[in-house]
Length: 279
Image (cartoon, rainbow, N blue to C red):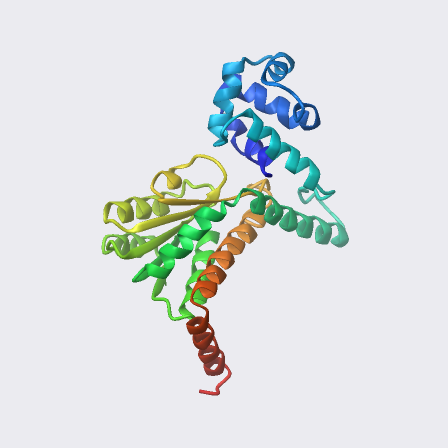
């Protein structure tokens, strides 16, 4: 039971003013609220009891008790790692420490919010798919290409395309036995959203890998998978977010390998031998 504070921080900017007031109070005073009642939080934060209930619904938790358990889990598992932005003329040791800590923290935060049931559904969708398509633009296209390479090695028919027009064209050919994975940290990349919209209309199973919170890509996704990274996208670019996306792809890949172990190991050995010139 973790991820309460991560979820709150992720959706702060899209909450109503009354919900945001309560959410900010919880983020600022997590230790205080884990033993509090709804009435106490209402009094401390200046928000209404009804707004607290609405906030819980916005977070996707069953109620205030579950939210408190998730926040308490965060407090128990918290460590000293913090997100750090690169500063002008940082020492190389500082850059090493900051980048590494940001990546570690992003993966740990993503672990807290990834839903094992959704991961299971995504793995099953890939396993039963006739074809798998990975869609992403910019840095996310690098994730799509990496995913294609991984799944090709275990004999899964899959595709990724760098050209957005080819992506859209391929989406019009999708069928009900295909699975599509759209990758966009913001969840608002226009071409990727369009591809998933087309895929859903064609009856394909759609999976999204985005940051935590509501976004356009999730609207067209049967299986939304969320990642967490609080990097400054202007200054840091797609660094920690890219690492979390790669991590999710690795989880899906090894999930498929685990469910189809003997055949996967056989194909991996064949590809290894071919690459090393032994076939």
